[in-house]
Image 1: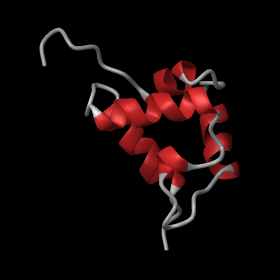
Image 2 (image 1 turned 45 degrees about the horizontal axis):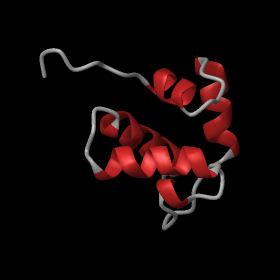
Image 3 (image 1 turned 60 degrees about the vertical axis):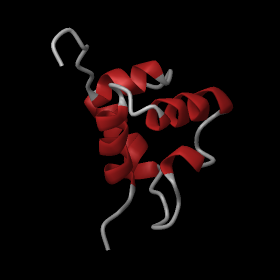
Image 4 (image 1 turned 30 degrees about the vertical axis):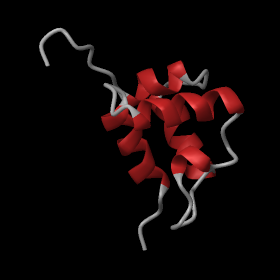
Length: 79
């Protein structure tokens, strides 16, 4: 992994064009919980550009995938 960039959830939100402070991210996640069977990359909360980015990065298992997975877990409330 030498030479690969390391991204945080703050970087992901900035990449998606969303407010990227810790407080803004917590508020976004709190206000947009996903249903148990709702896929993060298919949610209606994203605009087309955001959705395409998430889907492409997830599909190619790119450097963003760990952060996208973290977001996915945080947006699905625990039962």
